[in-house]
Image 1 (cartoon, rainbow, N blue to C red):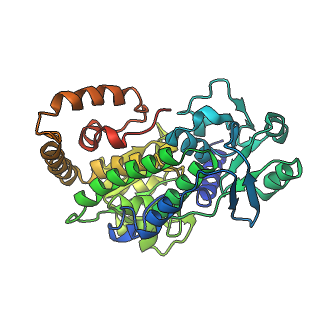
Image 2: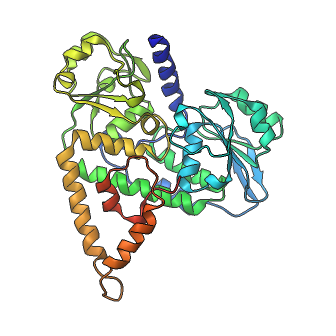
Length: 379
């Protein structure tokens, strides 16, 4: 049973490489996590004017004559993005499985049996548009299109910039361009805090544990981008692994990683070879469990996973970065345009914004730092 679980997790993580993904251009160098020129251009080119005509990854042209009133998300990352940009009031169908446990199903139709899409349920909803992350099988896309549905198949994504692009595209398809832009701003503000924290930081070696057979994430994976963006060196890259492969026990012992990182869906037991218990990381208690639905889904919440890793691995640098930016924010907001004390107004705005902050475990310090303008959208 345990081996089947490992195989399932490996398959899901492999699929996540091809979904709307996240992790940063230039992440391997620890820089470049802010909004770059291409992402800024995408923002400038966002179009929420209808009729809307867009072409997806398969070359299919989709035309929406009017803003959609009904949207179906086929994959958890699609649903998460819809919630994050504030378009969930149009979401009538979504997956119902552990990968969407943090999202509110409400009276929405569960369009999956586990991780398998139930075509009839999607078709019966008669959605105006169907969102399909790149992980979606071609047969699923074809079946829904043959039923007359407009299905937008997202491009393969491997970086933070790709996630930004997919957020913008989701904004267009759901008539929520403002929410998409706010979400990208929110991502960038937090990633800029990370970048500041890592400017002069060393990058300790980390082992991403995802199987008792030694399976780990190498280059050209979403997980690798998350790890390097969070300020660690990936042992998978050092071992020359590309994709998801087994790391030999000899390499694990010889390289002796400083940290072991895993997703929390494997708790209370970390899925790793027994030999990993001899590493410095394990002996020193440097084992980090990261929220699986934030770490493994290439969608906006991955920023939380990055922040969690940075706080654990680089606590002093991260605290200093937060305090420095807090001081800057305090100086900027101490007075309003008329020179009056703005603290009372800010406090009221903070109270209002707190009602819309999703309970995804965002560190309080980050929330205080970045202010209400870029807080996460309501669930």
